[in-house]
Length: 82
Image (cartoon, rainbow, N blue to C red; front, top):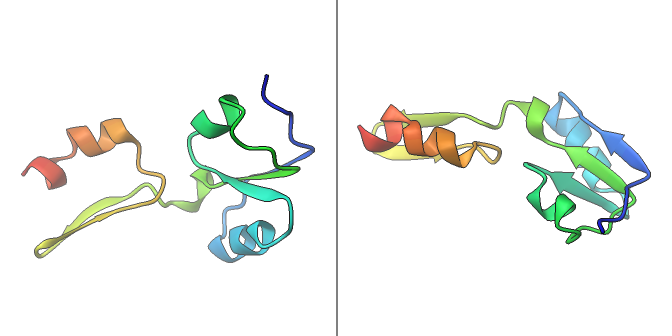
């Protein structure tokens, strides 16, 4: 059974997310798999979903995939598959 964190934050600013993650006992939350599996025993969870890090962009010959891009979105992306 996963341990329930004491604090939950969903920042909309990257600087705020970094400040929160710099605190002892905090852990990032991207999709939640590790949290639900009980792999994370943190007092504070910092949800990264509202930071706009889910982009998938092709810049010339380089593909940029954001940290919170969902696997399905990557799979379905025209930038990935042309």
